Image (cartoon, rainbow, N blue to C red; front, side):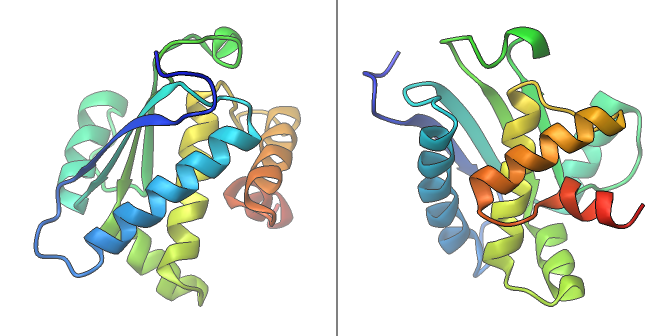
Length: 161
């Protein structure tokens, strides 16, 4: 494990030739460090992958039985109840850069903001947060707002109910 106060994570960018892949990777590295510090999870390993819609669709089909592209997938290393207290690897956050670009365009904001929102959402899932019940959704929305400094994906969905 990395010494306390450092961030150890792996960042994989699959989309070569995409003009956004390198700046997106740099952004996520910085954002990951910030979020892990806010959540008091420094020193834990985290894998982040930026992939194409084709790849995330394949992962979504294999792991969730849904044959469609999605924006973010999370693969936690710990059971939800143990995730925040664990000291080992956090898990994997996989983000579709293609979907992030489309969602940013549809939302009228920058791709960097959408990547931050997707990363926060995926990281919180890896740390045991969920939005299946109203109570869980409110708790996850509050944590998204804490790490983002603004309403996140779950918070947006709660305002639309």
